[in-house]
Length: 96
Image (cartoon, rainbow, N blue to C red; front, top):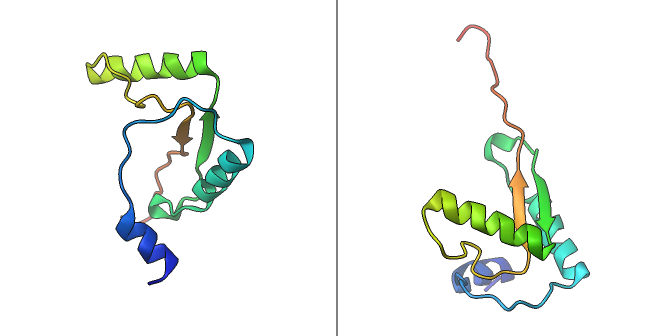
């Protein structure tokens, strides 16, 4: 079986993370993969922020939990949170 198909079939969701920091080279590879991932309507505009500062990560966690109406950590203790931003625009097609 090819590696991509094998990775898709054997993928599992994880909801518990070690508090260990992610090595810089591993984080860079993950960010690079994210930049090359497919985008909606081929907009090619993602901006990915890696939040590695624990105080900021905890603040984002608390804010997100509040929006969700929860008191638990929505990031399941992950030491790094990736915030993905994309440009929002409306394409106007003349005559429609």
